[in-house]
Image (cartoon, rainbow, N blue to C red; front, side, top):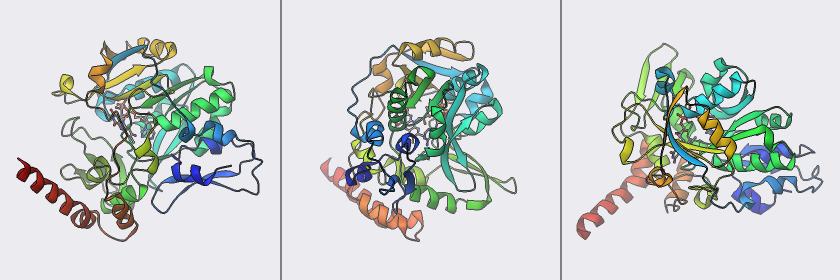
Length: 366
Ligand SMILES: Cc1cc2nc3c(=O)[nH]c(=O)nc-3n(C[C@H](O)[C@H](O)[C@H](O)COP(=O)(O)OP(=O)(O)OC[C@H]3O[C@@H](n4cnc5c(N)ncnc54)[C@H](O)[C@@H]3O)c2cc1C
């Protein structure tokens, strides 16, 4: 099917590709750097399965909370190399050790993109550490979720809601533990591609997406180059400036159906922002269990993580609980990202004048 409506609101989750019985759908990056489902209409049999699993057509209510906790891995190496408290890594490791398969996001250094992969060994789990703050290409890995194995699947809330719908349709939901995260949204791949090119492109050997060198609260990226030299982009990081300012998120992110507690997952993880852990330097994960299965899973992690009961209110204090407004500069930013201009130039010509204007207004207002 994949109507015009779907193409414009597509979250790029890739689940329609996995469920299509005729394999007539594929995910493609559009000109603005967002994954979109594209359909070969001549092969489509109008079965409607793609619409059934599409997150854009879902009306998700706040999920019931079974428990809310903070979690920190007891392993210092894990804590140092993960995004917040290393909870996702510990959940995945436990699953692998009990014979389950894991589907999670890794970084492809040849194509400089994030993609979901099937992980079956603890050694391969290393590559899933760290949040890659842009859309992940999921379609190939999600096709494997229907093999009847026991799975733990990690992903953005829209991806996980679609996987949940697919698993229910195929009567496989009991075999899956689904883990999503509090999600800010995903920026254009054109932003990431431009940024990574400016940081060294093909000379980059490794990226630490959430380097904790300057503390867990500082968003900085650390690059290891082919010649073993190292660079950290910490202050005035152009990638995070465009991302956190919401200047180039996907269309669907401005109308997100999955903020706060709206989730189809068993567990929702995130960074435990806010007053309580403000002085913590190493990282604390927050986690809400929405199902008994999720709650049991958390309880079973107490030997590898320090887990404390928390309130959901405390957890949500500094989370983005509503979709962001679409800034008026988004159109021009997306256009400039398609051109051969440096990020700093785009910033200076599109965002800086606006920011200066806002600053002057606020000073005059005072
Ligand atoms: C695009 C994006 C936006 C986010 N926004 C917020 C937010 O607003 N507030 C908040 O508290 N937390 C947010 N997070 C989650 C946060 O960055 C951490 O993932 C979370 O704190 C768990 O940390 P950890 O130490 O357990 O993760 P780790 O153990 O480092 O594991 C990271 C996990 O995230 C998964 N992952 C990484 N990149 C992607 C991706 N691109 N798509 C799908 N899955 C991915 C991996 O599969 C892995 O399971 C966001 C993550 C992403 C990818």
